[in-house]
Image 1 (cartoon, rainbow, N blue to C red):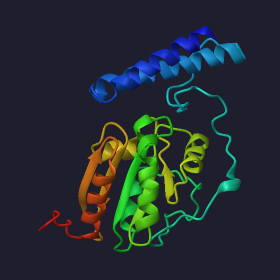
Image 2 (image 1 turned 180 degrees about the vertical axis):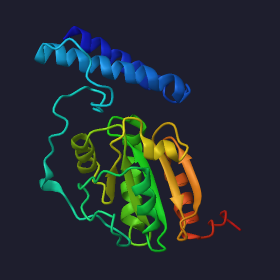
Image 3 (image 1 turned 90 degrees about the vertical axis):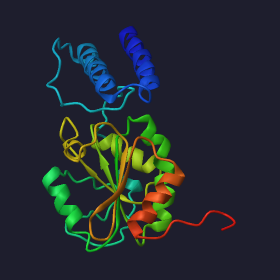
Length: 233
């Protein structure tokens, strides 16, 4: 449909403004475009002339249908640093967690430092930083518990994201339409990366796409490791 092509053009423009404009300005426009795309697909495929209930669709930016379908044959055991009742052992399990259960999960980490990353499969900065997180988890995953939180998404799209970027750690799924787990912690956009020490205290965080050096600094803070000395000192 020609209308969908125009929507994709608008989405590309919004992506260019993500880094320079406040999230409070970009997010409503992104949501409106997403919902209009859903309407156009419903109209074209089902002949329905109404928008679906808000929150019933959290698909990727290209508005592909059937996002709940997922091939689970590539599921790997999660490289957990500890065990906990609410901690999945399967990288593609994607259990639903609300803010209360998420707090419970963090409290069950048994004195293990943690890195929590909020992401969505449709989020360009999330996709850019995913290889860095995968590499860091492979390096530190025996001492630090990595946890992904998939927000404003579908489980099918999220599982494909995990497979695509070979994420070795678990992710949980926030089914709320507004990313309640993230928002309750005071963050507005995504990605966000939060670092907790072994006592469960937040020692660092980073809003937006994270660099390798920032990720390393956060992990060091979570582990309580000293910063490396400048060269020559």
